[in-house]
Length: 314
Image (cartoon, rainbow, N blue to C red; front, side):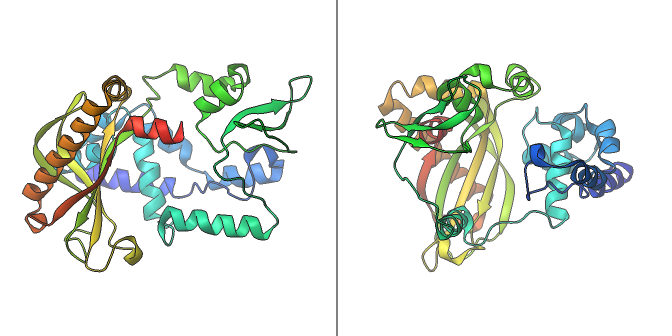
């Protein structure tokens, strides 16, 4: 696999040149800024020519070694473009991606502190019912909350799922054609979710820090049969668990077919919750089998499905 390994490294280094700008959105850039951005993406065309038509399964088949094949397909599910693997790999290897100090909650609280220090006002537990439009229906003028409160604004920034935005808060007619095309082409642009379980590990740190993959006995989960488990240890952040404990989390990728399974199952909440708990128990058993250091030291903390994401985040 020497040739393919070296090529993958070379193209990953090309992908490291792409730094997504954070100073301003694309539609506010001037021509000079666009040229600067284009220069930073030199070599991306070559990468897309080589890998652009392939998905993760195609990429894995370039290699002969079963371990390398498994490493690639375990990282991202089949159907994802091969280029996504390279860009993700490049973000980490190029020191352009990391975990925020204190995790996502601490980062959100820092954003709140910065926002309020500038005079921002928070309206908490205030669900937005719709975005209000001007008389000619061409501009957003504010938001209407579920309780009927109306808040006027010069700009509306929608930090929610695009499908919810254009199906509930606005009309589908406002969805850009480029985004519509992605939603309509579910084969090339599948919607991915996850079945996740969080465990408490009775140890100050995990035997394997970071993100890991282990083989396991086959387990039927929703519409798939899994034979390996991705799990992450959160021992890098001491405040995430009490002293002498560590949080572990598994994430089993789920497809739209899996979502349909959970949605149907959720029509009977008792059965839905029972199957969730049983699958969490089965994953615990398989983790203990795969990693001897975990035996008799794991406890299920929580379990959630694609339906949970829909319920919490629309």
